[in-house]
Image 1 (cartoon, helix red, strand yellow):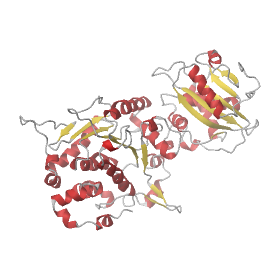
Image 2 (cartoon, one colour):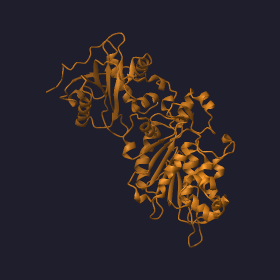
Image 3 (cartoon, one colour):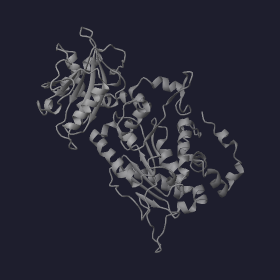
Image 4 (tube, one colour):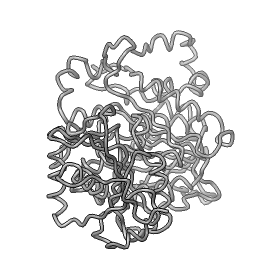
Length: 500
């Protein structure tokens, strides 16, 4: 538990009685800034009207203290944080109000650009920010040039709208919905030096996989290039498996995660509502807000696991749920194959090529499968795909065959995957996708299929099925499992088509 009195113990409180003293004491301390200038936003009915802090709030302020140094002292992408936390912890209050206000008041940043799930959500946040500038007497006393809008020589306001505010001290703050046209945002020659992405994915009910792809493209191609040195905070809760914030959270969990997370430098900063001490004792992240007794009464509920613990496998769908995945890396696998569900083209709206390594125990009534690897890619159906297949075969030398679905491309795949060191076998699927997925799910639920480890892309796709825009990994795994768990001859390395 954070002790506010201890934090204030080393401060001469007489300095807090004067504007200069308050400015000096809060310049390097965003937490104290919040207590001094924005205390009303730190009180709530849930905490009995008292100001209390969780460990997460303190850690967030420590992260923000890095922003005191000029961005030119950092390398591109050094200051990009993915803030993942339970609903109700105050992500928006801290990252969209208190910390930006501290940055602006002390001129640690000159141009703050904020984005939210919708335009209204973004402008509401900016409206809260501006109301503090207009009505907070302590801010107006200590930072008068921040609280007053900039004026042109003619006397007109430079910008004081629902989307942009320009202050006399030079601060620019903008707020937009994530789907707004944001390319090249700048005021004069000034580009944003702090970027905020607050809950840009909304809730599962109104957020589709296609939107995820479009919004990720907006972030990496439209927002981040505004200034590659800018500090970036992307805050959210993992409510949707495979969503943008879940991609970042997967890195924290140690799961498989998409390459864009590392390519663009995002570091997960995860806060669980349950804190486990070294001796195994569990306690609440914020006991004044969530007593441990309440947590114990709720922890079995799906919504609690999803909204409060950021567990993407807690989603409730018609097919897979998190409980359907079990993990084994100790089964004696006697046969292994690489199953491929290929795409014919690599156009933007085409399917992915999915590749899965599936192993099986010895034939018999208790035969089980283990999915060891699952990945989807967009590469041309030619030599690049063949080279990837060879890389996987080298990584998993136990593989004795390649299985290719030929619903698209027919037997041309045997020519494309020429001179492999293992047998190439094709399969044509005639049953509807939902029927095949239902059959595969039944095998999971009967304890016949395991994963060797957490397979983020595959599990997220299964959780979303049939709502996801892509289901290629489900197909690839289903084909491999179906071959092993049916009365069919195993693939053997002795019949190597096209081998040298």
